[in-house]
Amino acid sequence: MKCPYCSYTESKVTDSRPTEDDLKIRRRRECMKCGGRFTTYEIIETTPVIVLKKDNSRQLFNREKLLNGLLRACEKRPVAVETLERAVDDIEFSCASSSSREISSQHLGEMALQRLKDIDEVAYVRFASVYREFSDVETFLSELQQLVEHKQQNQD
Image (cartoon, rainbow, N blue to C red):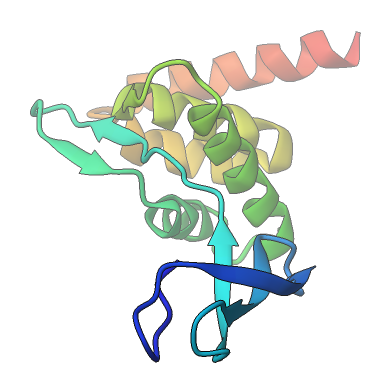
């Protein structure tokens, strides 16, 4: 680590502690040449997850975009934001822990639908209608019928 005062490359760590969010390590260092003290932060290096869109373009995974979609689906529904944030955390963790660094937008949408199915059925149908691009009432009714069957299977 280069000293910000004299640019010497050797320093010693005098104090080390995690930050409040436990995502970084704060280190106090002392330059071995000039004695200047400075702070550095150590974080985990992550490999970004890339989303492969329907048009074959690629975008970085954006958790805010996913959360906003779920929030829109749950608008005026009795669903806590914390519940949706946990769902996004689960999806993000699943993507990050996958061996592949790319995920299709279709797979991402299916993961969101699975979470919504357990959270709120109305939000699930709202999200599905946009995500699956329902073109007619029959498609909508078919999705509702599948939801009813899923609910009945889980009750048995």
